[in-house]
Length: 257
Ligand SMILES: NC(=O)c1ccc[n+]([C@@H]2O[C@H](COP(=O)([O-])OP(=O)(O)OC[C@H]3O[C@@H](n4cnc5c(N)ncnc54)[C@H](O)[C@@H]3O)[C@@H](O)[C@H]2O)c1
Image 1 (cartoon, rainbow, N blue to C red):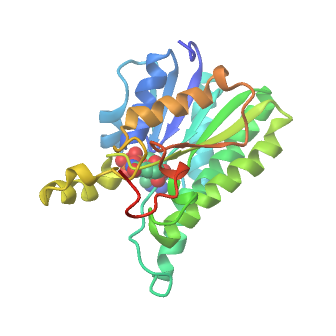
Image 2 (image 1 turned 90 degrees about the vertical axis):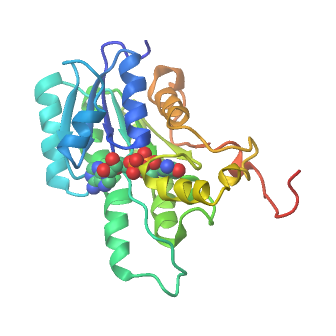
Image 3 (image 1 turned 180 degrees about the vertical axis):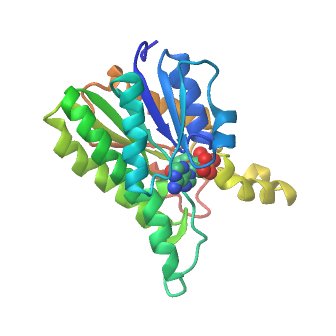
């Protein structure tokens, strides 16, 4: 019950990792605000109970983010934890072939959207002199090969923003960290999983990780909850891979037993 009586907001709440994160925080006592684009999908993802709140909001739109946080403060009076988790994937293409329109779309959600919440939730938490923010980056922000040029650049940006925002907010007692998930089965990666199963290669999913398997949304949620909790009270500005050891290895082809 590390979040007993606490107020926690999760973006990308209708998706696989967001939903698991809301469930985890609610189970540990939090009153949870779920934020996503579609009211119906969000309602279906919300944990049971009238103490929680669903907020339809496009994280890429600063005015909507401000309105969302104003509604949170009006209802609960404070914000203790923020999981900045909304994200979109970008189809992969070589750097010589990328579609220029994709830059604005993907960076707008994955990086600038996190920036909007860091700005406005950061103000609230700085005033409270307490708060914990966990951004969802990706192994794609650490190494190439997991999402293509634009997606990887957006996630590397999230890791950098985690460090710079942690420096700005640390003096106010506000912590900012990131998780870097490896491959997890969610709406975002469903096509990859469906394809592998269709061609009988499910056992190849995640086999390059040191744990020889892909991750579950609950395993990412557990790491987010840890970093958002007082158990991580002396950790800030860090990006934690939650990837079955994927980024720990050079993973040279042919070297795996
Ligand atoms: N699934 C993986 O393997 C994996 C690996 C590394 C990182 N991630 C990251 O984890 C996070 C969660 O993704 P997921 O895997 O649960 O995928 P998902 O597609 O199931 O969930 C993403 C959610 O973000 C929401 N969203 C998208 N744009 C939004 C916007 N502008 N405003 C508000 N909400 C918006 C979507 O509606 C969706 O519900 C993302 O940031 C993703 O990049 C996922």
